[in-house]
Length: 445
Image (tube, rainbow, N blue to C red; front, top):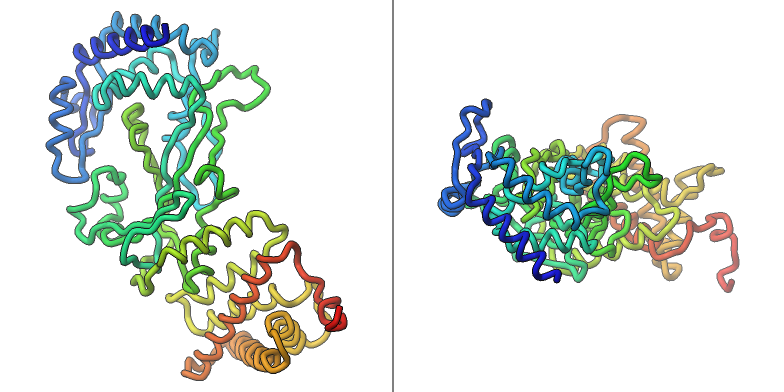
């Protein structure tokens, strides 16, 4: 019975596609709907196949007879009954929410209602059928009805790392490199990124790809419903990366690589979902100026970053301030003075109580040395290194100028290494140490 329904709907979509004119914007410069060119489905497919650059055509509308839409709505209504609000005759479409949302650096934004009239929804299925084929559109629709989520990918332009080859974690997180030439970039890249930033940012860029899902794909948009069913619920990497934010994952990558990793742009890639809606998908603002990729990211770096992020997500509290300031101390565009100050703040956040008593430099050096050192000789060495970097940073704060000498650079590097060791050790523990107890307890305890 279901096969017959699918075949009947597919036949109606094919008939509608054959009799529909599609309004197409060839180069994304048309501002008047009267200037849009009309194409049949066959002409549209040929146009898509013949495009030579990332400036692909955009479908801005469909001219379809009302009788064809009415026939489609009649076939769709019994299938989508649970998702239709009777008073407004609207159906809740997750794609509208997803494509209209702006990908942010931290979390996903609040979504809009996303309701569409049944005729609008039928029109979007015709539009998608023109490029994907009616059989594929019907298959996707029935999967949504069965509760399958919307699949998309969060894309992030990374500053800092380069690649010898593409890498991928077991959770499906990938890091790849784009071609050096802007003319070789894939057409699926959002054109507004290319037009605004592409020549300077994207070619040769390192791209982080995070597989994501959003639910529900279909819902009842009734305002009387108690739950806000139109708010999309997002999961990343099959739920293996809880509470993922781009900022926090870049910090995890920085710790794993022992280098500063920052994001430059964020956008979403929708694959087949793009064919259902002509919303203009926005990107994040430019977060950081691009600098030369000065280290190579490896497979073990990515796997370690995933594990660090999972540990951060499961710990309460995490050394957030220590991590963020340590990363800032590694920024290649920061001054030597700023690096020293950021590292001092990171060390204080890591090794000093909230209300420290006594002389900070001594206490920080002793606490850090005992926490990191495995034996007396190592602890003495670490205490000396931590005292040096703390005093250097104090001079930077009070004198507002320090010499960027080889000796001072070595002191900074040694301090950064110890701070990183401390952060990684803290992330392995269930809670923040009680430093007074830690320092005063007997070594045999």
